Image (cartoon, rainbow, N blue to C red; front, side, top):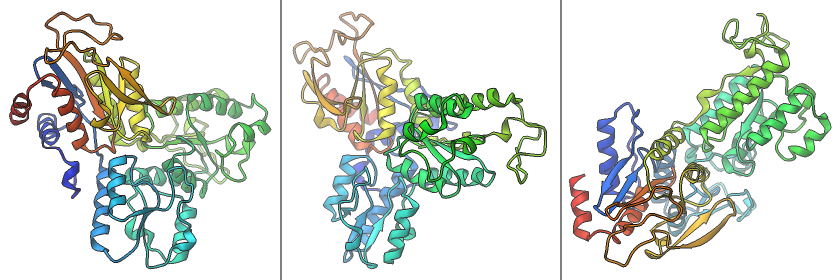
Length: 445
């Protein structure tokens, strides 16, 4: 895979060494067991995969290179480059301005732009409508477009199945930048509707089967369907694609559910007669009806990095531990899903940096369900410093003995710099080990 030129401040010697060693040991990336950092009274388990993905590193490289190569030009980002506060703050400090917030609300009017300005398209991509507005001003959007290639893959797959007269069902968060972009590209070619979760997918299934009145669809999915959407006609033949940062298992479950809905409605065979479902002029294939006539196979739209990071967390959670820490931006979709997975098994703290670890006694962490930060006391349940940890977190289920080390699971989102993860590790380790022990561990790795 390509090596990107990103600012050294985002790199971590410790994390880089760990990742390089794991790559050498597991070239096929099939081992999802975590890496143990043994500090005596503290055991830290790092997920097999975490941190910057291909699309994020690509976007960061292009953005910083653009700034360096155009010192005399006004440079704008359409919205946040990625969902990480440190990276966005660094870009702002270099003179970049944001045209919109993450919800698409205008911060700087497009009318103030000129053809000599630079506008960088973020890794999430953007809508066709915004691209057209920028081109009308004379701005070269293609030159500074950092859209993730895996997001573009979803768009391309949508276009392919649209040509076969499938309606697109997008699994995503309706307000998210990437979902808005994917919806725009899909809706330009075929009827499109967004479902945010399995609950909405099940409601959509009722409209597919005709058990709910068609007119209520437009209220239930207000703002989530393309112009001119016809419930009776446009739900007879569908394909599911995803916002790449959603839980891969959720997308697959939604696709499977809607596929079964089609099988139930039409009494179809699970195995297609010729495997391609090639449509004739009426939208159905010439062979006897099968599932491929009504449901497109789009499993290839799942992002590899999202899938790897989520699989690594599932592997991480097989390790008995007291608590988990997930590092990343609070508005990061892929990071919140990692938190979601961890919360099912143990006390989990979602933090944006080591600064949120206020002390051994207090941590400031984000509850993404309630959209607010909370302070939790005795989060490590420490005994008096500098003695080693000997008691488990009060919510943990496994009792500890006097010799049991504190065990912490750590991972991060795809937009989180490795340097932040190392800073978190060092801060926690500082409560349990001397600096010499930490440096020795780094040297050994």
